[in-house]
Length: 179
Length: 74
Image 1 (cartoon, chains in turn yellow, green):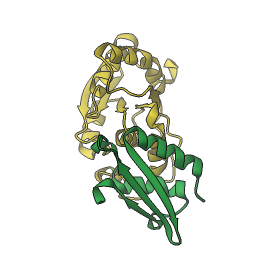
Image 2 (cartoon, rainbow over the protein chains, first blue to last red):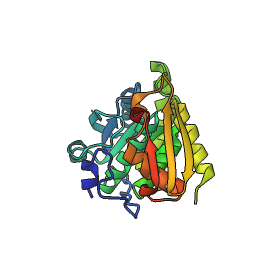
Image 3 (cartoon, each protein chain N blue to C red):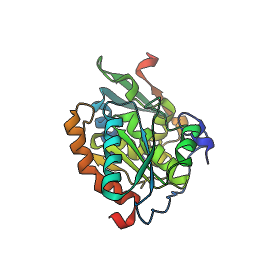
């Protein structure tokens, strides 16, 4: 399974044929949250804000936040394992361009296959590339969350508002009871 | 079989990042070219292997039937 993550493109073992989702957590109270952002402007800030809201509203605990070094490539195995070791759920994004939305979708599928419910956030202009990447990875119906494009140009206050708008759907993606 | 609707959606999505997709059908497959605006985001184009994989179901051919040219190739 993970040999596909070692290849920067995520495709070294060919296309998977089945979707694999992790089970949702029963509650977010005490749930350990891992945040995986990319280097796109405002991505880390938005995930930080969402993490803060998951803590204050749902009782979750953010245990780790990492940034991928390259927006175009899916998370590598060492970083995936680092996050997996201290997380019960993952929030990843923000896919705000063609390559980063595609790699964010691949990240979400990788974490789900590793057993972690994952909420992937992409801007709506790049739903096509995220969906195409999900299909390449054998999970064409993978569910990701959309926010209006663009994200990179938002002010700090606007990022906070976007996080506010997304917090409930992120919680619902990770935990059935939060829906 | 080539899916024109999906191809158009991919074309529109690439255009948001400043890229322009053209597709020419050949006897042996498809010649796909992606050109870049001067202000396009260099990191925003997926690796070529990924783009070919994305185009396979859209064009209805296997990877071997897609000749892809990126801006960095010309």
